[in-house]
Image 1 (cartoon, rainbow, N blue to C red):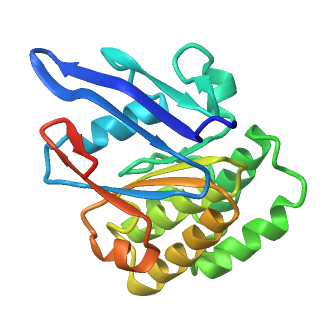
Image 2: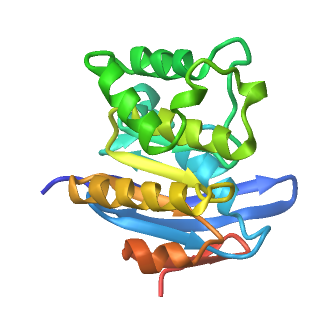
Length: 216
């Protein structure tokens, strides 16, 4: 029997004396779409940072394709793609140079030009190909962050508020992409305030409150 794409075991995180995550456990299988909702301060972003490996939890485990994210980081992160709520960029690289850099870093350079051109066109960023991050609007920066997630291979896709600055067309394009990825077997975990995504994407919606996830 194959391992779940993502397995979270008793994950906890402390900010000083405040417990932002409280022994959270859940699994996500290949092809699943899971949306995590909840109020501000519920722990959603802390959870996503721990799942991405950018934040080391106080206790607990995260397994990606069976690999321990904190013990076998390189093997686990091969299958992990993450969109933070505010993507960060290299100010000296253009849009196209960012895409090429990510493709090369993840050994996905073969045919990346065609894939990149398609994604730029679909997300209406073709004219921003030679622009630098400081010249991009917040929505354009978010679209670039999404493209950087999608240009590389992965089995688990984590997205923190991916529609927060997207226009309706960009949201529709993203939803179509996510549906196709799920059909192809990717596990997708989305932290969002946009509950309309659930009606479009289907999948499972869970609520987070005070560091706990209610699995229903």
